[in-house]
Length: 102
Image (tube, rainbow, N blue to C red):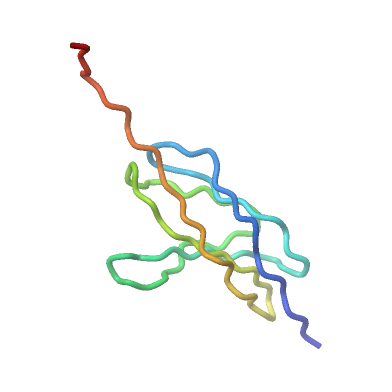
């Protein structure tokens, strides 16, 4: 008998820099992995980003000051859970340089 996996919720974004941040969420009972997808605004569709056994994932190599939407779902060898609600994450903008007081 197959049971339904819970839905990932309470996704947090931390360790934010100009080119990376970390997504984290709570463990789902019965899950052996988590699948992360992001929204590709150019293609106007969701694309798979990564699959991890952990309840956190660091997204690297991002453009500064750009926001991206993510969804995460719990999976195991038998069943895939529903994707979470979208969460939007944004990198930091680089601090301005060569400023002069007048």
